[in-house]
Amino acid sequence: MRNSIITREQLLKARETLSKLVHKTPVFSSEVIDKKVGANLYFKCENFQKTGSFKFRGASYAVNQLGSDQKKNGVTTHSSGNHGQALAKAAQLANIKAYIVMPENAPTVKKQAVRGYGAEVIICESTQAAREKTCSGIQEKTGATFIPPYDDENVVLGQSTAAQELIDQTEGLDYLLAPVGGGGLLSGTLMAAKYFSPNTKVIGSEPKGADDAYRSIKTGKRLPQENPQTIADGLRTSLGEINFEIIRENIDQILTVEEDTIIKALKMIHHHLKIMAEPSCAVPLAAILENKRHFEGKNVGIIISGGNVDLDVYYESLK
Image 1: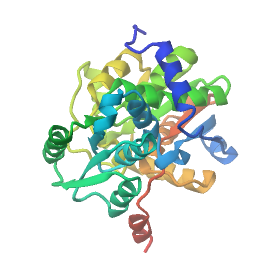
Image 2: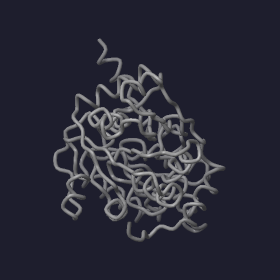
Image 3: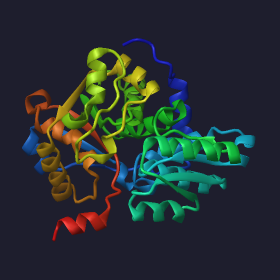
């Protein structure tokens, strides 16, 4: 492994800072799942985090690191999902203003959640260009600081604390798996393992229908997501620049998985762990299901990234 731009001291600072702001989420296991896969799995349940996902860690640390003048003008971002909710809550706890740009096709329940955390929701057309333009306009008008969902060092440092906790909550992890979309969680996980559990191999996992990280690492250059097709909606975004550099320098492997396996893994999580999890959370378990020999007899940590399921859609699918 080559040297990283992130240091051990920065990781420890993030852990100490967030110890007062975030939940130390539990680690679950299931004898039934262990028998099915032939390995010992430890699920770090970030679905129990504030706002329902690991995103609260990165948003909270990014807000915490702002200067007093920046805080006066508030923060802004564009998001249709977990990052918007996380930033809204982080701003609420810091007693600063938050402006969250959301596309018009964002689920009503998520718009309501963001408003519920006290943020101002600005609706725009459902295109990336419209989201970015609207957000830029808010920055010019209010002076608010833009907080990216993953392509930011402080966000990565915040996300690293999930893996830091998991390493402390378990013993002798052979592997640590995290899903990869924009790369914030995987980047932070890699840094945590590098400094606090160097014998643990970190593996990224993503759907075959949204495999930009796999292709980027294979070619050595960051490639955009192209028409992603996957149930794992949280992984449809493209890899960030900072995240790509960290992943390229430190990753052991990225495994891609089939949609049917993601659904199978999601059902296993629901049935045996008895928790609400998003489809993106099931991708690491899917990677193990498709590569059982690789993990046979090993101790494996998995980060369950979030549990913000749109129940209206879920219940409709049951009819």
